[in-house]
Image (cartoon, rainbow, N blue to C red; front, side, top):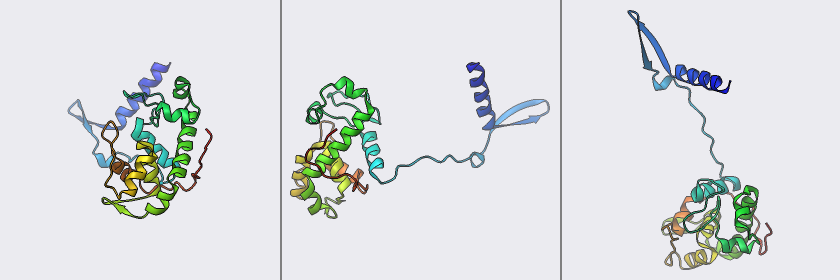
Length: 194
């Protein structure tokens, strides 16, 4: 039954994108001009915290919860084991199988980084460093990439002290790529709980 349904769907799709014309008892198939094909609305992410975390998750792992990279970073947001220990997450197998735990950990990490970087956020948001307008979301993304300490060094040196991760990704690239998201609902917290 399932095979029959798939065959019918395939036939409908095939015939909906082609037209059949008849000439002297022969049948030819010609493609429908592109202007006749219905446009599809592609979903987009808003510039809110959900959009921010989904954009970071896609950049880190293409949104895959069970991925482990060659350096051992885990999950959708590519957490290191030491960072996970900070949130009392010790069982990495369980972490990889638990999307909800990964989402809560990402939010807790943003709260912690916002607390660590609170003075730098206040001083730096709105400035332009190395041609990049500094935003709170850019700072939080850069802290996710490199750690809050490296972001402090970058901001306090006005961009002269730079950092790249093991794959060559820079703080600057995250400051730029993740700029302009509204992350105001994330409250700075010295000891966030997952």
